[in-house]
Image (tube, each protein chain N blue to C red):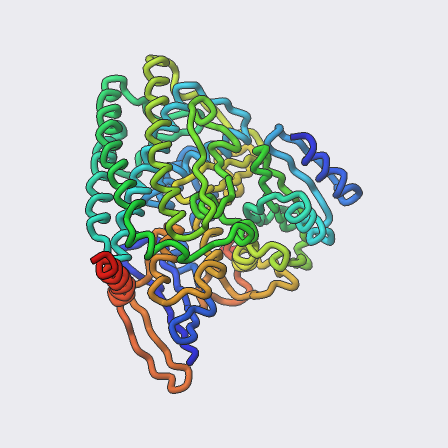
Length: 143
Length: 400
């Protein structure tokens, strides 16, 4: 069990800003948003984790993107955390690396207005076609 | 000639309306596009306005079929956040409710799949033997669906020991028909001819699209949250993860049928556990949820359902993220439908068990003339049934 987690830790090296092991099954890693593509590629392709989903949260400090990965063979969920400033809500897309992230990045754009740079198909996913531009229902200032 | 066929978006009897736009070259599918959001209810947003306990009721209503899977995953997440270990008896209760739900869900799928390919006998059988499970649910939980048995810290209600003979009787009555259906379906030469090699999802595609549940297991990806991260009573009982290698519709049917037997095994052992823990505590008192975050997941009948909660110490979550299994299984159509013929699409779409919907209205557009032709959902099912009939007739002629 330790091996694969050690591989993640060593492989990411200096990219890790914070490493928190809440319990053996839940690990939270904080990285800079500039490193998200390389981190996602390393965990998905080199460490063979399964991408579960992405959670976007509107916090007082900025938008938080949490990328959840599961190492099924050892039952450990690794969550990669990034903080995106509210002044420039954009981050690089990982959908070209992980096709399974295509839908959720479109959903996060709908709900929180975070732009995914380089997304292969940046259409709306959940909101209807006549929903006004620039209104994102999961933002705290949504009324 | 290139043709675009939209399937969907609405069928009033189904959950999860979706729009599938199939691009066809002749009869062959060359591209699939899925449009979601027709039934978006904003549950993640509503969840932030309700208390921790009220949310268990709210999210039970995400799905009418796998209605207990979401509360189990949600409570796992809250318990992960607060560091709560649930009592042993609650573990058995959760697994019993979860597995009975899997049984009725798989039988429901089997019936629908049978109907789509023109095997209405299978439909009648599947739904007939699903009924005693729903009756049992009514007896032990008070409801045929939306059982409200799961609570943060354990179970909301106990399963009474006087109900245990009924559970045992239901299970022992279910095994012979299950064996019969399994043998009848898996030995049938028409089903072999109709479903083998249809809608193949290759292992590498299943991994690429992050597929879960029977959809992934039928493609040889041995993932199952119940085994990989044993919670509830899954680590305390003996059972096996069912996998198949072929990845076609037939393999997905085999996985679901064989999983039914595993579910029966699990419930039988959990019932023994209930007898042993008679009178024991079945729910911990949870006063408040400390600030922090928690992740919980559960193997719903259709695959992993995932919940993430964040707490700031107040009486309600500040964020509650939900991911249902169909969300990641749907995009795999890009891999499994392309190259299929239109008559195989109905069963391929149904093979991931997406709470099958949307075939109410199909329009065929000729891009050259812009002429629009509407086909009903019945027509699509008829095309599929026709193909089975042709195969059956051909096999009969061959055997004479």
